[in-house]
Length: 364
Image (cartoon, rainbow, N blue to C red; front, side):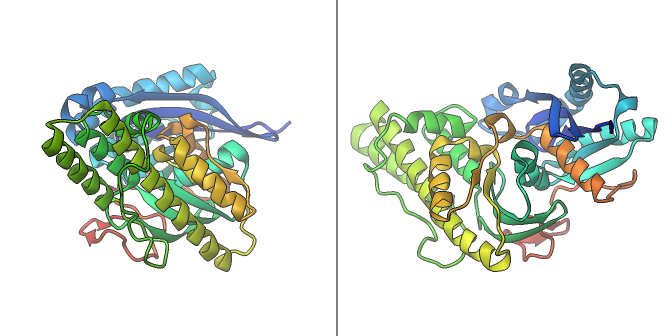
């Protein structure tokens, strides 16, 4: 019997420190352990993620997460076949914490080391969870990213479009802050939206009047701010009903924009890859049930399967990094100890930058 190929994955790109052990055997992949230590309580007083606090927390926790993951999996370092780590994009202090931990382990053990693009981790998750075959369309939708990607192979992606300003998760967080809801904003806004009327307020649907797959969400959060200020000026404050209706209207607008643009992206993807197998979604915002439902409807109209990962694998985790590293390893990729942590790292490096560029390269 062939021994399973077993990888350790380390993730520290934002505010979740994570480690996981994933094994690939004859019957497919298995997540042997997945440890995620969030930092919500550390950042809550500031209304958002503070990079310096995040970096320090990663440095303090990453080795503990690795130790716990290996212990839960019942796997020793000597039993691993490789180590994968998020090398970017992300908050550079956090990325460095994970990269240095992974390099130290690889140097001490001699194990193969792979620096993984965080976006590839999300984009390849449907293959880990559902064995989705290439090529497929991925909507990667999170707090920091929103892109339509054709996954041709584990090391080849084409970007069809994305956000030209805020990512949806950022818009959810800012909306929560505007309305006095706790962070992270996505779950808070979704919970309020479930109690509200999505038709009460007229929210814009940005860029639906323009062709293509690009998106914009900055104007939606501005609309929330203006509507809130109007209500406060009129009534002297917000009622619970006002807050719920604002959340419902905002969420409905985001879901509709994503659904319409996804339908366009499917048409564009099929022109490039006529054998497209699946519509998939990943990233933290993929946990939103209303957005999932709209995307599932788009897939049904297109007569394509729809795959969304389990909720625990929508947000940042080490399992997706271990799997992405394992997939790249099987294709012959390896990194040495000289590879660098990268704050910016487009998954489709041949595509024009969406959000501008700088000395460190394209942002997205």
